[in-house]
Image 1 (cartoon, rainbow, N blue to C red):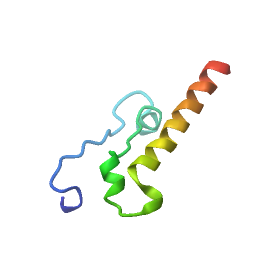
Image 2: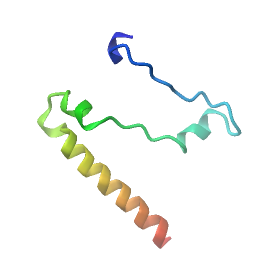
Image 3: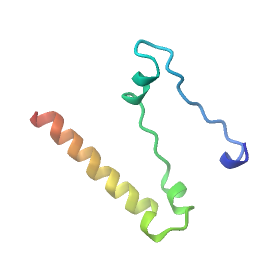
Image 4: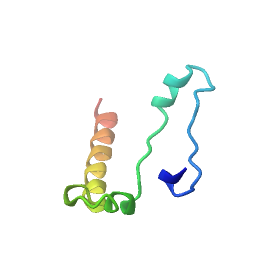
Length: 67
């Protein structure tokens, strides 16, 4: 595929108990810092995105520990 520069992209197809809805709870796909930098948007740089992702992960860990 031209849009992924000839790379192979594997996607889960829901072949387990719960079907495709089970995939939603088991996957988190995010790009590399370079992927975000390649967009060319100042608000969406890799460093900024990974900073926000770190905040989300920290908050999710906080919720698991305190609930």
